[in-house]
Length: 350
Image 1 (tube, rainbow, N blue to C red):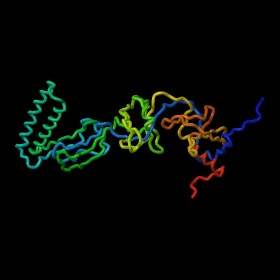
Image 2: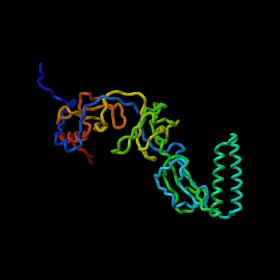
Image 3: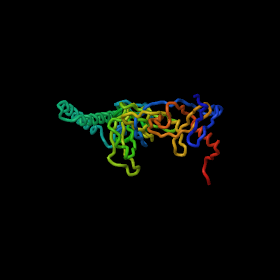
Image 4: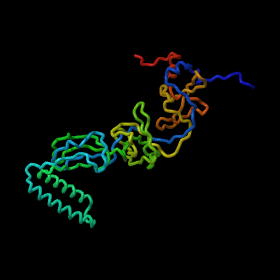
């Protein structure tokens, strides 16, 4: 037999909420059919972006000199490995004669020649040879300074990165060992995530990905499995935070800034299937996550849901099905309209 009609109920004791077309037009508003999908399980916590180990260096002056003004240097400058960062015009240290510097330079050159022969025979390490080369170059430059040749000495980058801080100005006289600039490596970066002790153990050696949540209004930044690597997990719980510090290495992280405090989600292998809705569709209604379902054009139903998982700006929920049309933008406006029509007042009682 044909049914006499259909009544949509919003739940026990609830009536459909009226939200007129005129109201929908005055606010950002959108709906779409609930879609089946799948998300990776994840663990999340507060995080901070920092350079990888060995990815930060303070460049120092190898000799007494003057910063060459012609070299353009600014914060954010990209520098290649072994590229020149600062140029110094050497100046002789006070109290040292030309003969003394010349003698030291000759001895350093002779020692360098011997070490090069020993290195060819694998009798000394490369580190020792590099130190001898640096010392010989420094003394030659100092000798040039005393002799008035006007040659400059480059201070080069030990790795590719960007200038994070400049400690000198062009034309400034600096002493040997003075700090000139600070260089940071921007790829790869380390993400230090604080995880609750009960979930830290679920993080395996091969994460399925990483999602970085930025500030309000910023889209999440996602990294696939091949771009992330688990570096380490602290053996103890941090006394101040009660969290386990975990380090994730990220490659191709141009969108991240060193020193930024973020919220990080570490994705675990495996998938959970179900209904996936945008995070914007979820409204916190007095501590209860709800969505609003649209049975018809100007009628909406409040539906409590259970959040099963999150991944960036997508949420896996239980409580709605593929036959439901869900409000994906403007759900908070419907909640306010429902409160006004029911006479509820928001605010604090004094």
